Length: 145
Image (cartoon, rainbow, N blue to C red; front, side):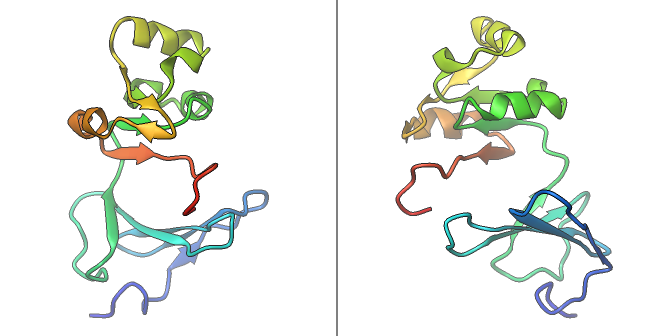
């Protein structure tokens, strides 16, 4: 069986405006490539729905979708997540005092969202204790981005 890096995609999402990523469709998964805006190595993720495909590379970053729980390191993500209808999935975020989204502030006031600290020095223990499906991390201002 060929590894995904050797496999040909059934189709590819054609993007008109966004340039920071590419999505390729395979029978058992989608390959999401996120390009580093600062010119470094791209990140590749393999998204699957039910059972992890056996034909992925051994070192593949495989993610089962849909995601049920999310944490984020930037309050700027909250508006985007709301627009996607995913605000209920957010279990943790950095700098809660800087979030001005009314619905999210209600969640935070009701202790339905955990404050993960400052986005430049995230509280790793709190983040790991949430056991979320994904952590959305902002590369802005990172030295190794």
